Amino acid sequence: MTRRTFLRALGLPVTASLLAPLLASSQAQGGDYRALVVLYLGGGNDGHNVLVPTDGLYTDYQAARQNLALPRSSLLPLAGSHIGHTFGLHPALQPLVPLFQQQRLQFIANVGALVRPCTAAQVLADAVEVPPFLFSHSDQTEIACGWIVSENPTGWAGRGLESLPEGLRHRNAAVTMGGMRTLVLGRRSPVSFMPVGGQRWWGYGDMANPQQSATQALLRMAQWQSRNDYEREYIRTLGQELEDSMYFTRLFAKAPTMQADFGPAGDPLVERLRGLASVLPLFKAEGLKRQVFLVDWGEFDTHANQRGSGRLTQDAQLARLAQALKAFDDSNRATGMDLQVTTLVMTEFGRTLRPGSGGGSEHAWGNHWWVMGGPVAGGGVTGVFPSPRLGGPDDSDPGQNGRHTPTLSIDQVAATLMQWLGLPSSRFAEVLPNLVNFPSATLPLLRA
Image 1 (cartoon, rainbow, N blue to C red):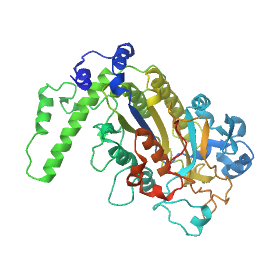
Image 2: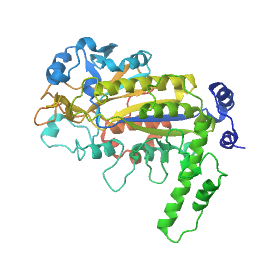
Image 3: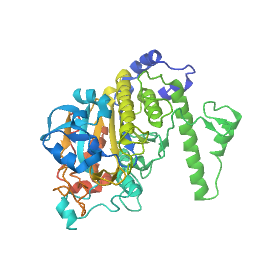
Image 4: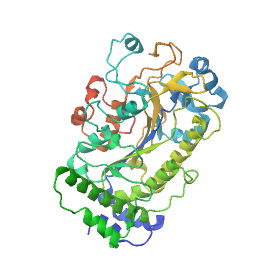
């Protein structure tokens, strides 16, 4: 009997105490488990108010940001000097400060979509190739997720998972918990949709009860013979979706209850991260090796009312984000997954330094991301921090609104994380074609 069969055969709810011996017995089979969790902040989160310089650059930051500038006294100081500067965090990110101090959190400065390294002067002179459709939400979302701007709609994590050594590949490796999927979409393998709790009900069909008559009818539909390629593809996909629904539904039914305070119930981010933390140990116990989970959340297209206490201000969203991330990290430590889960927080592009007329900011380019977890070489900032001066050396906007040209490529972040999952460097070019244009394929984000 396989562990998957064994787990599915268990009829009792699994509490944390009941899960412990099961995890202990599965160490030999599941010890090589690694999961990358990608939290995508929709709309273009304003990184200028996430990681703020507190040294001499603060004067330029304050002058450029005007009414969006965070008071220096409100910033949460990050101990030490990093890439030549001192920094503070947005006050709403207080739950993340201990993770930085414990070297579990690393910031990535001025990262974005690039074809090759370039400077703001080259961009202004139209002397270098840049990604198409800059500042477009839909297009930059797809490009950030790995779209190569061709008929190939796949993403960097999906292609990377397919290029792992054979012993690390399996079904349910590419998982999305929301409406996005490009990042985890491969050329040949399916994407698994995992709503919190699993998708238990298909009409009257109960995925937790395969013997129920309505469920049996659905399963028979997935075995119908077909007359053409279209019908065969539909039936094949239906069968995979039913299998995934039954698998995830039964897994969630056995998952322990997480004790950490993720935030208010009903918030999609809270529910997704709490649910994901509860099932990660079960994936490991079943002997799965590598997984990438895509979690999308947030409304960060803050053209107006970016500051303040309103539910959709950046200030309020960052507070909910920090609480949920801290609880997710605490839960992974409590369940013994500490060294096997890495979380990347990313978004499609940055915002302008100069505020817009409505108390918000406009679409820009380079941005600040971060990685979190036990495998992270935290407590620092990677990259080159851009000048926060309008019309400065990193501003590639003709109107001098403060659109920073990235100095690190998304491809370099992707290569670093996929290499941690087991992607050989010899396969980088097929997964990330533009990576050959950069002097360093990977970044010092993770521990050796």
